[in-house]
Image 1: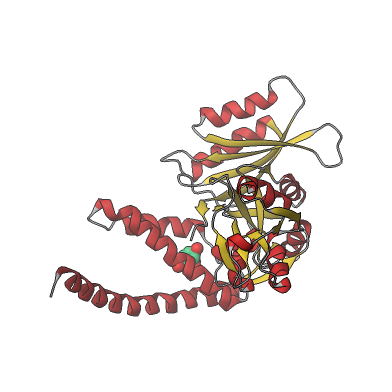
Image 2 (image 1 turned 135 degrees about the horizontal axis):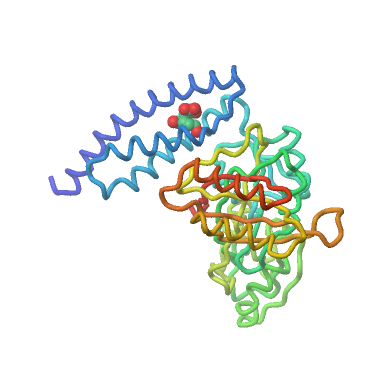
Length: 368
Ligand SMILES: O=C(O)C(=O)C[C@]1(C(=O)O)C=C[C@@H](O)C=C1
């Protein structure tokens, strides 16, 4: 038996044991879900997860394997949460747009097992989460090229009952899609959302292609599938090609290869976000008095306590002309604990007129 065969035999034996252990773990998880159904406790427990990760990674003798095992455990707990949510009927996730749109793609990667609800506007997604029709809402928050999605930030500000549960970055790759039998050489017209057309302008000019603006990329893909004309193509995601039976005529036609959209997951705030420190981001919304140095005092405190401010956004206060609110996102320093986070918030409360902790979460990537 060569080395590959030998190693695979060993892996097969381990996988067989892990399958048994997986079933055992999930039976215990089902008991937890039943307990949570009776008590109404939330499925996600940040403090317990941090403890599980720390306790178990410390058990590994090979230190180099610890970060990998950490990810492995995180995945195991994500699966456990999805299973519990399905058992409890608390697994509906809402998004704005149509199937195959980027919000839908982000949602499927974040919640591969959930039921989905689509809405025409971002506001309706917020309302669905607020009134309990959906457990989660997945919304675009910022794009690396186009900047903030200010409307979503304002909705966050005006929905104090909701918090950011997760944040994740999704790289955006636009493909040229055609009907079966089409080829790039035969395409004359390309339809898509104006932003996708603009991002792909170099490619479109190189190939001398005419363009037509469409309401969104996924619907452009649906439309060309219906038209079934090999001379008409769409620019949209590869996922949309699968959805409408199209083929990719050219991959990655958007010039800006680093185009990434940051999505937030919102949920109802049954409890305040749970801060655990190191490894987390804190998202704060605040207003400061119109006095010299007031904003600087807030920012000074953040820096002095070792929290790295990775972004600050300022927006007009709804219904108060020429007054502003701020959104800051902080990276908790290495070694920091819940107590450090609480001490920071206590200090900031004295400098801010209003302060709301809108999220304490980890930043994921939604890459496949
Ligand atoms: O211990 C719990 O409360 C669980 O729901 C179990 C579990 C796990 O799989 O270990 C899953 C979700 C929670 O966020 C924490 C831990």
